[in-house]
Amino acid sequence: MRHYILYYHGGSSNHGCEALVRTTAELLDYMNNKITLASFRPDDDKKYGIDKFCDIHKMFEIKDVRRWNLRWIKAYFDFKLGNKQNAIDDLLMLEALGAKKGDVALSIGGDNYCYNDTEGLIRANELFRRNGIKTVLWGCSIEPELLEDPVIAYDISRFDLITARESISYEAIKKVNKNTILVADSAFNLKTVKNALPDELYNNDIIGLNISPLAERCEHIKGITRQNVFSLIQYILKKSNMNILLIPHVEWIHDNDNVINREIFEKYRNTNRVYLISGGNCEELKGYIAQCRFFVGARTHATIAAYSSCIPTLVIGYSVKSKGIAKDLFDDYNHFVVPVQDLEREDNLVSAFKWLYNHEREIKRDLSNQMYTYKQSVLKANHYLKNL
Image 1 (cartoon, rainbow, N blue to C red):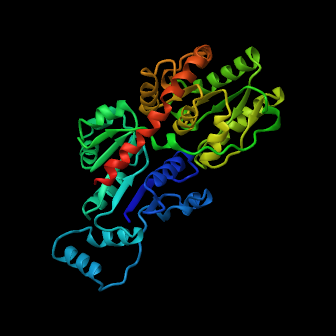
Image 2: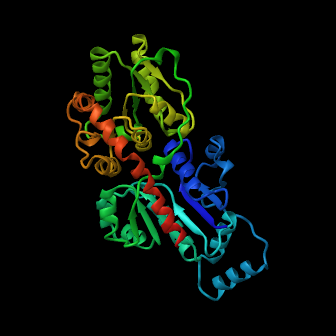
Image 3: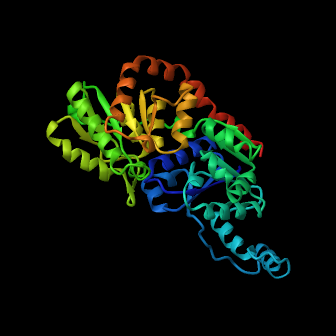
């Protein structure tokens, strides 16, 4: 039995993070191996049932240990005589996770290095590496220009294995770390649980819609994303008989898709064609998405749920990951991704959706033809993990 540690997990109220944990644990054969999850929000993970297959701990948790056993004595003398300043702190954190030399630690955040807290990521990588634990940067995307920062580039270079989930990041990362492979995001293999839709939606074409506060914070023209969403909804209501289903994918208090969804729902409630899903776990949310004819989404793992269900998808993008995934699926991300940074007019999203609608049949065919092979590429990562 091998011990895998999944760390720097933000919590399962971000259902993309939840999807990564579920699919990674399954890939790592949690029935026959031990999986420990180091999470910033353990209560969220228990709420969504992650404790059924992971031993959940708080990230950077400290555990008191019995003094004068062999591990404590070694750490004490390493600190006093070996000038290893972190020896005692390391012991307390590793004891909390049950971690030891020979284990494998996977940084599972995906695009964590694209955000502000890189100091914590570097600290965690260093903690594991200096204690004989192999480290893996798992299913990641990284803006290529971030690797121009020598601190980040050095930290990335030290991972024993990196799995990049799209080719734009892969081409940049492999210049820094030769132990980099290109595989699909493990969430492409997420199971689908189909719950009942609102009664009014049966036998009707549905467009799934997911809007994110994070995407709005990346726009260059204040309010332009919301204006484009309103224009798209009005176009759909006027030019088609399709209904719109608002689907959240992140429900953190500080970054909650439901806030925007409720505002949109209230604005269009009287049309009786805009509906609201209150939430669910990632498999249930994928089930709602899989029942749509089209999907327009901002959250990466909401769009992955759509792609993997062979749903024609338009991405409201804000980072390299959306462009890279679309490029790998369709050879070009144009027409499939509308970056919020590029929104200039209120009808940008409508124009992109028109193209998607007119090419519906070809898009479904292309996704259906390649999805099995694309999903199977994740298994290549497991081969490399076993050989660490």
